[in-house]
Image 1 (cartoon, rainbow, N blue to C red):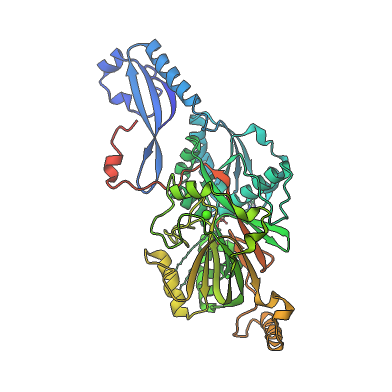
Image 2 (cartoon, helix red, strand yellow):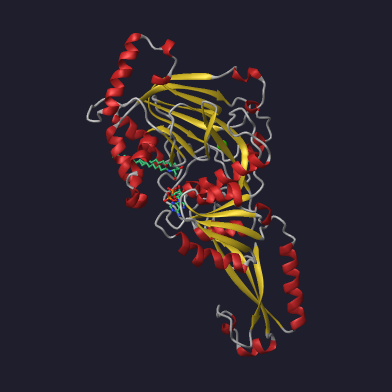
Length: 490
Ligand SMILES: CCCCCCCCCCCCC/C=C/[C@@H](O)[C@H](CO)NC(=O)CCCCCCCCCCCCCCC
Ligand SMILES: Nc1ncnc2c1ncn2[C@@H]1O[C@H](COP(=O)(O)OP(=O)(O)OP(=O)(O)O)[C@@H](O)[C@H]1O
Ligand SMILES: [Ca+2]
């Protein structure tokens, strides 16, 4: 794939790649007109690199003809962005955002003749609010964020809210069908988890992501809307987790100074605390789709399942009252309730929370981990780091759903609570106020893509392919990697 072409001044010796100098002087005298073509070269583990190849010719007009023809071909590729709006979070991950952008990404955008407006954010939600109200979106072919999953989430909230407002859609109604965003989003990874980038590109590497932006890739993605009592709370793209992942996040927020290691520290602490939470999960299973959460097939570039399911009518956002038919309910005590709308693969767990989940199939995988021993929970967690099936355990169940609701036990109808239960509720409240007590507190928090939600009772619906990323999904690794990388791939 060609990225750019430029003239090379052979006589003046100004070129810096040193390649032509290796040619015998006689040859450079005979072919003094040179031009350089930059192209994408695939490296190991889904990495892409920019490589150059220089061509020499004997006459200047011929060189101009080559350059002009290649430039015309490149301009004709309408999927490639020409103007981008870039937001950089200077405080994400290891605080390298600005440096990564200036050193690795900006030169590539310049080489591909992409113009950029760059905003270094000054506070949290700066990017979100700028997109929501001020940004002149008509000027751009896409929005790029430099940061982690939190920064990506800001961009999604800004763009989705803006699109709904521009189209007169009320975000507060959980039944409303949302209007898809037209601008694509690029992520230059510079965060702590980078799970969106990892699961859509296959690696968290800034140069690879920049090249996917330049070649104009497009990957649709599902977005979950989260409501509480007919009030909009947030959107989620990767993980909604109550219990374990909620508690890990709540604890780790107090340890931001530790950087990315805070998740391991809080993970270990939360694992030892071993709290469980009681409640009811009701859900609308996706029955009309291809694929299940226990499949061996994975969502990969050009995924057939996403294409197929993406075309199905999504009955949960229309006014057919019968959609209530077929809801399932599970009540009990849970260590974790997770909804993974995509695999959530990341360096910590290369297969992810739900390895067979799809990026754009209009569903989320609802994973219910019931109360069990610490030993069994550890076995379950450990399976996330290997190829073993984390769902093949008696205390774990998984459903592929279009919608779900969670009601913590102490929030349920008074009529459902008998006297004895009311007594327990009071007891739990006391426990919440006195953390030294060894029983579990009544409520956990929801971890919504790395943000804590203010309510435990929520209602969630999946909006199929609401946004698009500058990515193409993970490409299948070729059987013989070296054959896929011949030395002079143009
Ligand atoms: C024994 C090792 C087991 C390892 C099991 C690891 C499973 C990890 C699955 C990670 C899934 C991440 C999903 C991504 C969520 C993002 O939207 C969000 C924003 O960036 N990240 C987090 O909330 C950040 C969440 C980070 C969660 C980290 C959990 C670490 C668990 C460590 C448990 C240690 C137990 C050790 C017992 C000896
Ligand atoms: N200028 C800023 N100052 C402070 N916070 C910011 C600024 N810009 C963005 N943020 C906030 O910082 C939070 C974390 O950012 P980001 O996602 O880039 O990194 P991270 O948390 O280290 O990575 P991850 O989300 O992958 O774990 C985001 O929620 C974002 O809202
Ligand atoms: Ca999905």
